[in-house]
Image 1 (tube, rainbow, N blue to C red):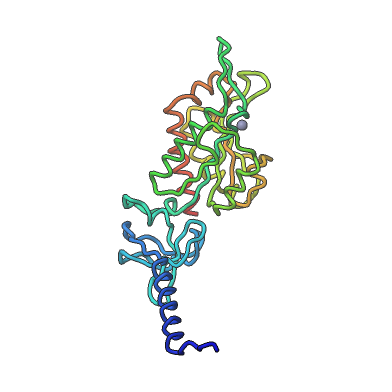
Image 2 (spheres, rainbow, N blue to C red; image 1 turned 30 degrees about the vertical axis):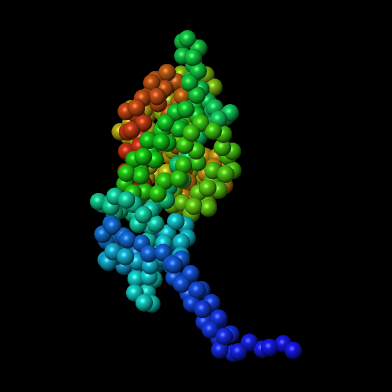
Length: 281
Ligand SMILES: [Zn+2]
């Protein structure tokens, strides 16, 4: 004959199990210390959502995470979203701008087995487009990160990246801007010169192109303004997306600047200014 377990034992076991589940649940809930004062709290996970509050006390409970934004509890029944990279910063950010709350994808054209266009000097040495798009992309990324911006690079070394994954990265990150860097090339060397900023989609992409292009007047190469361009990385892109041809690599005059540190730094500063302008709109 089977003996039945007393009810009191069953209830005790159930209570212990319940307590364990509760402890496990609480231990999984993350709290964050927000070191940067007065961070914007948005209604949703992104800068396009209205600001509903600012951070005040130091410690918040994180409920969930989406698009690299934290959903935090402001009061018992009030929730909002903050940019996780600003919360997680070790050094508090001095100046919080809309740019610091933005996610920007920086795309260095070509890479790896795809070297892009090239410049050949009088000794027949070859200088490849992929080298200079990466140098520029790294400087732009560093300048943006200095302002707190969340930067994602499609590549940060000399490796092959197919075209399609580049806009897909902007989509999955829900990027606020996608900027692709390239250098132009003319059929005959030394025939082409200058900078062109391309958009495919009208609306925010065209606005982004205009905001950046307006900053390029201080560069030593002719700024040829904005134009429509049918490039896959900006065409098959649902986020604001542009492609910048920052000079002709097979022009001796243009290449002299393209390879120079000071030109690259100037472009990086212009991109910061242009994005600031774009996010203010
Ligand atoms: Zn190219």
